[in-house]
Image (tube, rainbow over all chains, first blue to last red; front, side, top):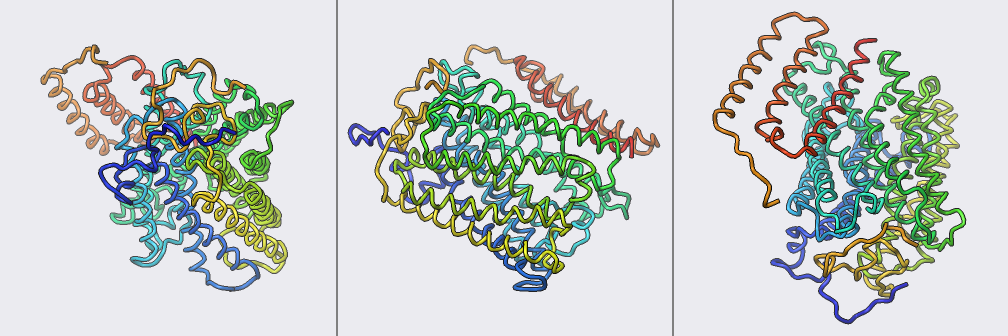
Length: 535
Length: 94
């Protein structure tokens, strides 16, 4: 651990007094670190709102019949829960918060290539979020389509679909601009001596993510515009009654939304790849293989969207092609898991909170990954399609993957961001409770799905009762763990913990500068003479 | 960067490009009255690709830019083309 040195410090980015003071100083700042934190605070707000919605839905499902809400309210709630969690939390996710904060530092730069565009991305994110939220309260009621807006229902429902997809469209622009910014930053601003294969692996993960954001997001943007045009002008892209093709909507939606899963998970994997060598006290195993696997996930991930559509009426030839491609994308993901575990082999593991999060990530992500094979296989997918099994798989991947990595990254980089350590015992206790609750909440859904319980219903048959009770109680346990984790971090942020520069003895560039970082990160741009994980 | 040569495209070229885009737009509209069956979409995509290529090459200066941009744009177009092919694979065999 490197103790905090109070002498000869330039003002850090938190103390810096620019043209404006207070909140105006934050929302007009083009400093990538401040923008990262703007994303962080706004995303945490939306995440907690999404958690509350999830808890309400789970409470509704504690018993058969109506508990606290009727069918229409439940439909609106799962739509809003999906929109909030997908578009406002996991898609910007690790990249928007930790990518913004740490990418320039990790590559030895003073900022991203386009700082103003970066701030504009955050504004677009907030504007899109506000429109999505407003769509719940104006017009003819909250959208009840689910976050997928499947046609032709999204064209027929009287609920407020146009406003919701407009919000999602604007959020897409935020994502595209962030991806573009990161790609250019990595091409143009790497420190002297930092060749591509000396770049930290979190940077590589963000590079792959940036390309997906740049290439896939416009597809869904145009698709949403087509939905709006069809609702307002009756053009007939997707509605079969006027010559459209509803399966075309599913193609276009998933051409973006499947790669979007990789927008969520690639930066998460990148963060885990930073944590593991730091706590294994060992050079990462297979640096180049991880780089290639990141890019392979980004590339192959473009071509697997059809596995969401096996029961849609798509041609049987396409189905087996997509099934084959889906199995192929499992290979680079498995390479990463292999490399993480190989890094741990014969290492001197330093058991700390971020490391526990990383291990928990690998565990839940593997359950998510293996259950994905059930869904990628044609015959079994038809049995479990649109059941609770899919909900379980999705949450193991997206919440278990991105969520666990997000909290892992937060516990890892928190001392760098705020120069404070949190209470480790409380953090570990919170994680254990969260982990137990998470598995108790989602694992029974695999069982329920195999039994045939459909998803997106507020009611169910009595045969599903006991597993639903378990799942609902699990949601309470998970929420308790989450509360402990967040309170612990808030207390540390307020100054309860010890001041430190580097509690982990990390080797990447962010650990070579003071905590919190100074405004321009480095007093002098460093010259890089070796790889990022030289232990 | 400062020493890099900047290519200035003459006005005449810009006007030719503009005319080309207008002609292609007219063709886009006219071709909808010709019944090409399954090839309707193919024809529309080819014309749209031509228009896109002209914009990229001249208005966005790709023709005069460094090779790395050629490579990047080509890769993007290749991926996009592959996505379209895979999508239409479904229609072909449905």
